[in-house]
Amino acid sequence: MNFLRMLAALVAGLLFGLGLIVSGMADPAKVLGFLDLAGHWDPSLALVMAGAIAIGMPAFTLARRRSRAWLDAPMQLPATRTIDRRLVLGSLLFGVGWGIAGICPGPALVLLGMASGKGLIFVLAMLAGMLLFGRIEGFGAK
Image (cartoon, rainbow, N blue to C red):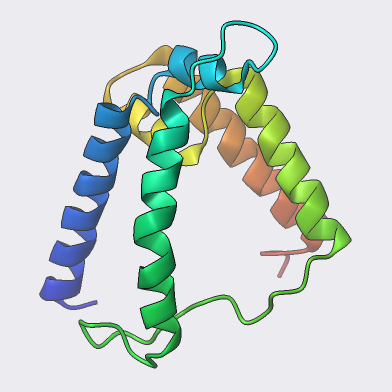
């Protein structure tokens, strides 16, 4: 990976992390407030999601038309659009975990960078889940 790509990745990651902090997505209590439809629902994160969709849709539309990214890396978009049992079960598992902890992988890394105990526990659990998935699917078993 060349220097320009690494710099772009760093800037994108910092911007993403800053966006998570500013939007409140790195605050598990705020996320759980958004997910609590039966209690004191906090709809503010719906605006964050709407903003992300409004930016993401045109960006992915443009990306689908290109074979290479702006910094000349190959475009790596998902090859399939099939909704199968594995996708549905994985999405359900992700949603349940998000609903229990109020944290998903991006905010977990932000929390980890902020020396949060919750972030550390979540990242360790996430890594354990990734390792378990790899064992079940036979990845790395050589």
